[in-house]
Length: 166
Image 1 (spheres, rainbow, N blue to C red):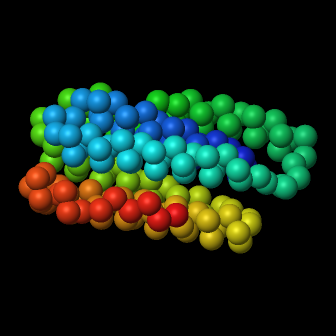
Image 2 (image 1 turned 180 degrees about the horizontal axis):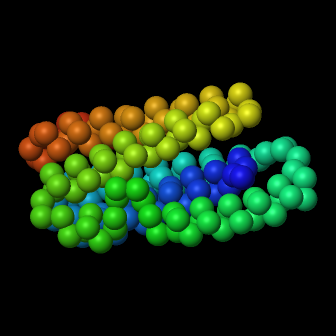
């Protein structure tokens, strides 16, 4: 059994893993604009993690459910402890080109969107669902921006704005 607290903890870990991978990629990016993009993406992931940290659940559990929750939490934490879906820190850093880095980051954003859409179905708070919808929308904008940047010459990406809408 997985509780909303378990799911929240997974989402936090995913966001923190993404932040770490994006920060490392920023330091290793060959082009300053790509470094700036990855720094911005890392800041976005950090902000999302803080939002997930604020989610609380008033779900009451039986003793048996508490034990199952502990086992489920441990299993899920082990599964995602070092995972960022399709975004692997080392392969992102070692990508042969800026375009490859942007494509890989876009895949991570898509995976994250799918996971958060799954999460939304498990949430019992309308307010939390609305806030999660906002994060999903941000993740979609991230993906669209990364897609556009990967299709464009890096120099022409200077005109693309990094949205800070929340």
